[in-house]
Amino acid sequence: MKQRLCFVIFSYVSGVDLQHDFLATIHKCLAAGHSVDVYTLEWRGDQPKAATIHSVKKQGIPLFRQYAHLARSVHEARIKEQYDCVIGFNAIPGLDVYYAKEPCIAELVQGIRRSMPRHQQRLQFERSILSMTSHCQVVSSSLTVLRAIKTHYRTPARRLHWLSHETCEQTQTNIHIHPLQRDQSLGDGLGDYLLEYLNQPKLLKPFGANAAMAYYGCEPTVFDRIMDLKGVVVRYKEGRKTLRFECEGQGFYAKLHQGIGLGEWLKNWLSLRAPIVSARTEWQAIAKLKSLKLPTLDAVSFAERGILSFKRQSFLLTRELTQAESLETYCRPWRDNPPSRKERNNLIRQLANYVKTIHDEHWFHRDLYLCHFLKALDEEDKYYLIDLHRMQHKKFTRRWRIKDLSALYYSAFEYGVNTRDVLYFIHCYNGGKPHRLQKKLWQRVELKAHSLQEKALRKGVG
Image 1 (cartoon, rainbow, N blue to C red):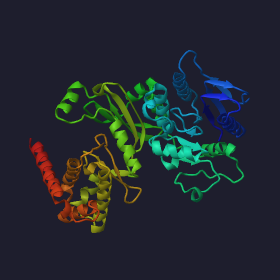
Image 2 (cartoon, one colour):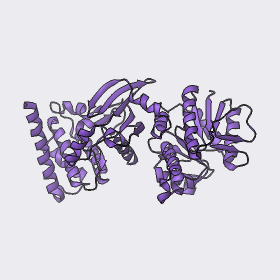
Image 3 (cartoon, helix red, strand yellow):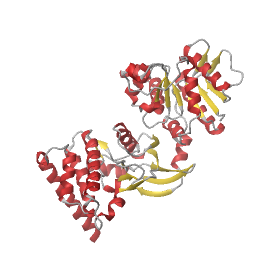
Image 4 (tube, helix red, strand yellow):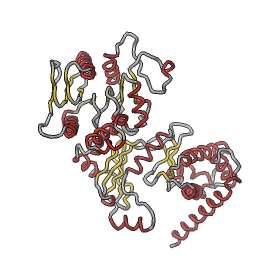
């Protein structure tokens, strides 16, 4: 299937290694019948006859501002021309495939140099395509560059592709190696990878590239368009609206933060409680759970704007989990129709291990009820943790362990939880150690759980 491709490079000067790879890849794609448009600040050298070159250089402004102008131009062209794939030889937001020939900026720029505007922009551009929540595929002939990317941005291994003839065993690396034939040269390796990538089913979803552009200040209108999304409102509270919408037949959830206001902001701080002012909290929590290989929401994109925290606007887009149901729904029949001990213990063990993993990393959900766990219907023993907008990293853990564990215990009261279930949960959470070693902790958990129950009953009576 012939596709429309968009290639991006800061500047083309014939004779340089990066530009040689760039031109060789374009020729390979043209030979395969794809149409090619090139966006660059300047082109010096012979132009491919079948490719369309767009020079978007602006005179009289700093070079790093011109990079932002190039990124904005590519974004606008992608919307207008409906390109099937955007391939970049320099890091800019919105790429589908990035050829990492240059050293990682995060590796090169350290210390006070990071505060310089030009370095800040390059780092932001890298982060937009290399972060754990991006979809961009990273291809490189340098294992050193890939290792630096994985170290600084924790890019998932499935998105890192090393153009090498060696094997994993020879290099002793866990970085994914794209399979190339022995007779292929490194110079043509990117073209071969790209042609194979274009023949795969499209896994990319909308808004990822657009939100990246908005996040880094290249296209403010995209931010406004997402903040004005229409859909089914699921929750509306404290300047935060959650709605469901569909795009190309797939469901998404948008969490839109309009700012909590000065009054709510002051009330939180006067209560010695840090307010949640942005979707960044949930975006970071998702990234942390992904790094721990724990099932959770699939974040599509995140962006925020505004200096004053109580007026800050932000959004987070996540894919809908279709093949899953809430544990609240799953466990509802248990009181009248108890499951087998094996099924019961299996569920308790999975939850205990999940909660233990995040608590050992000093991360706490702060709203850990059964309704925020989803059980996968298409996969055995898989549970998703959702509603992470309050989840944070805490230095002192005892208070937050008690808060999470008591909330989980309280939410299980109505499903027939018994002493045997509680002891088995404690056994799993403690890693098999006797619960007597933390007797005071579990006593506090039980007291707080019953306190939550009494509070709920009072509210119900009122």
